View 1 (spheres, rainbow, N blue to C red):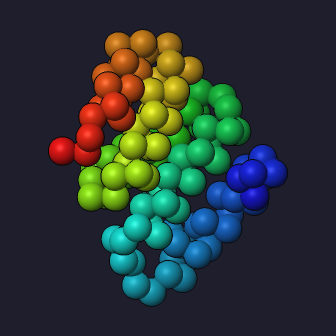
View 2 (cartoon, one colour):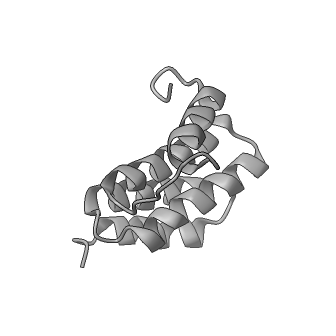
Length: 105
């Protein structure tokens, strides 16, 4: 759904599989990290201030909860830089761009 830019369907599917009330067990693994990142991408793709703010939250979750998943963490950091740019906060955008350039340590 993400590749087809079907943002609402992506959010619904990710919510059903990873984040919804019907999810019995929440594993904080690479798959959930990727789903969290994709949820941020879907909100970013929808555009508008409220969706950008939601995207920010999802990307920050990746940074906070999944630091060991470096490829996903780096992608979320770059997406956060774009999100902050879109929100008009160039200072924060630069900070996250620099974090994405580090080696994960």
